[in-house]
Amino acid sequence: MAWGMPLATFSFVHVVLSLVGIGAGFVVLSGLLSGRERTGWTAVFLVTTVATSITGFGFPVDHLLPSHVVGVVSLVVLAVAILARYGRRLSGAWRPIYVICAAVALYLNVFVGVVQAFLKVSALHALAPRQTEPPFLLAQLVVLALFIVLAVLATRRFRREPIARI
Image 1: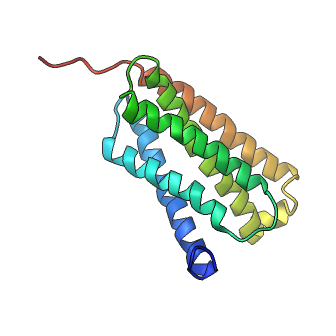
Image 2 (image 1 turned 120 degrees about the vertical axis):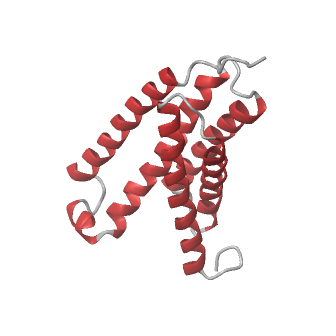
């Protein structure tokens, strides 16, 4: 049992939140890359990604795991993103801070997704059973490089504030 529900149900909810967060995150990131914010998608992304990180702490374990560290980092990054977007309304330096935090939060969710894929997909697990083998490291390196490029491009393309209409 986790949070009053069977572990299988809890795992399903956690995975669905993760997948919705990743999907919404890519919609948000595509908007940032085109210089536009997707307001509704942003809310979905932030809420589901926060929920994913929080529910990650609900699994029964007896010691601190690397996934817990990623969860804490993700929640800190998401708190800054939420402050930048809703508290500071993307004004001034908060605009690029938001873009970078959103990209990092999405990256962390995808990073964990790659870890889970190598744990759960038998073909991937056979390639890297300990997750220290070159296929796993290469996959994570490619994901990291892709997100660095996307974050830099999104920061550049989403840097101008819209012109106020009078």
